[in-house]
Length: 200
Ligand code: ITT
Image 1 (spheres, rainbow, N blue to C red):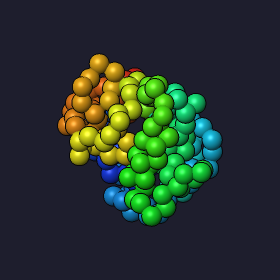
Image 2: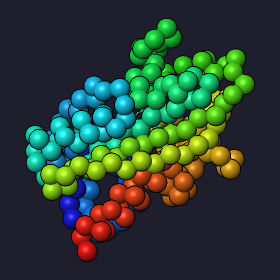
Image 3: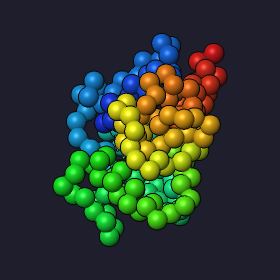
């Protein structure tokens, strides 16, 4: 089965391919010849994931899915959450001069500087459009925000996120290790289980 994955993030594409296995051909946007940003205008991960999947489905047709992910930090009342990508480009503290991931981490560490509570979670929502029907799959991993970045793997907030029960940040893990516990891998495994029931 072929599915378009409506993302411009090549790290997400590798992670999902690694989990999903060889029975499904996952086509990234650049391979599908689709250029440019996909809109994400809503205030929930669920709505944004559907908006991304819908955008591609309506423009190009074909079965497709999208992932929207947020880092929900308890001491920040769940922020940056759905705004995780734009975090360092909004609010009182901004780092427009820094590459987004660097700025996001810098802002997060500043905002948590005086806080004892470091607990957080990554939450991924995958929206699937298959034969004109819509489905949602969720994956959550709980952890803490480290006091400083550690590791060079992964992407986004990975250098400052340590999953509960582990001593390494996500950026210190290889892709297989991160995929054995991550939010995206949990949501992707639910997607795969569902797809199996459709193709039997
Ligand atoms: P697409 O919308 O094209 O899929 P994106 O990178 O904009 O790609 P999101 O909106 O889902 O993806 O990501 C929100 C933010 O969370 C963004 O800053 C990402 O770098 C970060 N993020 C997403 N998944 C992550 C992960 O597994 N580990 C660390 N950070 C992640």
